[in-house]
Length: 283
Image (cartoon, rainbow, N blue to C red):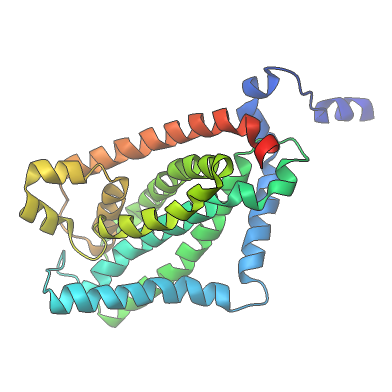
């Protein structure tokens, strides 16, 4: 019986075998995923208030600046009758999660170089575990959204029950590009300097500080459909619909964004799996 247990736990590495059993190995190494995720969360939050404070201060400060500039100075309209601050923060939550997850996953392989070069396991576990910290930050910052809605006496509708679905979409939207970024950073180290620029640019081309209806009204439907190729457009539209309880948004840009999320996820997995064979040699 003991010999059978040893045989079950045995992992044979041979040409082509890792490719055939890649997804099975991901499940087999689920405990490693939990360990890495718990380690990252512990480093961020244990024996310090900086982790929790930064998860709150960062989106709140951005929300205040955007509310003053775009809501008060520029006079842009809100959505669904919601206060402008609530509208902005409902979009800031998924955007901040996306930005943090993209940044952390892009550095995850480099940050675990010692583990990568010594032990066999599906390398995808590393960027997967790094997303967990961003998800915890998202949950912490969600308490501020709840507080804002209480402060402004803005009650959500039944649509709030659909929010977990859009959270999953946000995770997938960050994970696909994150896989591409981390593979590129391993191969081209200076690529990590481009990522903050991409994140900063993405903030302004995503409907965070303004409503998507403003873009549709100013640019027209054809340009708005092109604008919807940004995968975060559909995610943010979904979040706002769930939180603000506004009327059903235009489904076409949401469908386009969802399709882009799926393509980036599949493309990211394929690209990462192709590149990870050389990680141990170049990391």
